[in-house]
Amino acid sequence: MSSSAIAPARADASASERDIHVQFRDVNHVYPARAGHEAVHALGPIDLALQRGEFLSIIGPSGCGKTTLLEVLAGLVTPTSGAVEIDGRAVQGAVPDGVGVVFQEDASFPWLTVADNIAFSLKRAGMEKAEIATRVDYAIGLMGLTRFRKAYPSQLSGGMRQRVCIARTLVTRPKLILLDEPFGALDQQTRLIMGEELLKLWRETGATVMLITHSLDEAALLADHVAVMSARPGHFIEVIATGWPRDRDSRLASTPEFGALTSRLWALLRDESIKAMGPT
Amino acid sequence: MTRARILQWAIVLGAFGLLEALCRFRIITPFTMIPPSEMVVSLIRIARTQSWFAEDTLYSLRNLMVAVVIAVFGGYLAGLVVHALPRLRACLDPLFSSYYSVPTFILYPLFIVLFGIGPMSLIVMGSVFGVVAMISATLTALDRIPRVLVKVARIEKLGPLRTIALIKLPAAAPHLFTGLKLAVAYCIIGVIAGEFILATAGIGRRLSLSYNNFDNATMYGVLLLILAFAASVNGALNVWERRIHRRWFR
Image (tube, rainbow over all chains, first blue to last red; front, top):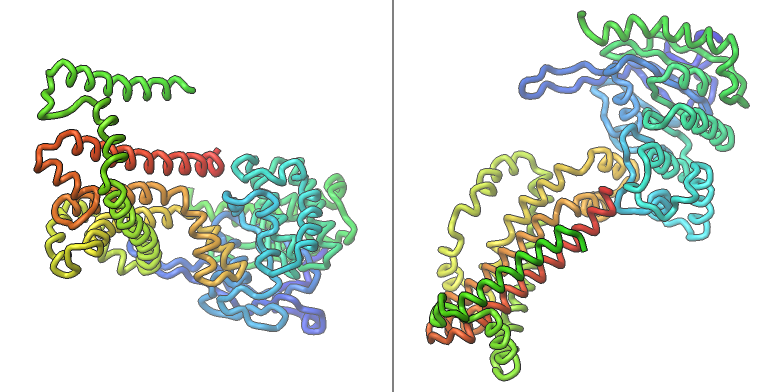
């Protein structure tokens, strides 16, 4: 484990030599004042260079701008200042190609069955029926939803609905996967299994992954690097390289190194979390 | 059949039975109302023997269908536009909320001047009466669409029209039923009442003629037809609504 490398455009010279997939340059976002509310400086400054195929977890206190950061990268929010690039092309308030997003909230379509939910993006892309069927079958099996392929989301638990959303994103095989607390609705054992499946997919596809989570264990277990954000306005206070092998799984959680890493993350996060809760 | 459903039927049949008894025992005189069973017989008789029945019924149905289509689709599209323009919505909200406190029928003479005594005036009357119910329901329904679904539409790079067709319409559907039912009911009222006041044909006009001629048998037969039609349409929409709600919100 070491302080990273990926990060900040404080970026060492070697960053430019690596295969940079995502780059944030001095990104800030301020939510403008509205009736009865002052302007909120939610995010920034953010500098980050994320390598292709990297798995980055982001943790931080509540309200520190993690979701805003993800939405800026997804093109859903235009930052107030700074630049965001994917593959060297600016993200300017439009969703870039090859980006898949799993949201924290239930985003399944209640009017479609599980299979149709998962096939939604593929059908829109005009893919051949046979290929759609193959991908959907694989995703349904992977997510443990085989018995529920014809069920509607209202017939599923919250965790199962979230798995439908994850499957809907993953079947498109995005090059950049953005996950905003995707496992928040799942129980602990399902979280671990889903995390392992995510790692497997990440290894198979070589996608770059940015995972936002509240779980220190999840952040430490899954990622190559864990970025710790400050209280609002959120910026990175440290990016830590986990040093795990690429072929890792949840058994890592029982190692002393894992314990040391989570302790370090908590040490960094504790003061920021207290700060975020305001004066006591 | 559930106990609630049995009770509902008992209340309806009980009311009919009571009305039948009151009419049969002349507590309600035949000049005021004929027994419900005679209304049914009268309806069957006029349907079989009167040449105007099919013509007037089809005339009213045609006008009603056009009015419903304009009110429902026009109301939905207008709702989409108003929802997308918050300032316009702020301006129009007071109009929408007070719309049904204004007696819209005072406009009917104006429609006759503008469109003549014919189908156009009746269609405009029906749709003007129903459209605001649909606009209001559309605005409420769009407010209730989870924001995350709109974000998914953006991630999927759906344009505005495909977002409406593939996300907003189906997501809003369960909440649109209130507007749909009200719009249909208001359109029925608008068209039939318009025919009743002044028209050259239609089931409402036939109601008016039989009323003026003291022809109670025909009047109540026609009245029963209108009631049965309105109740059937509303019942069908209720079944559809319940089916969607069961699927979505189990």
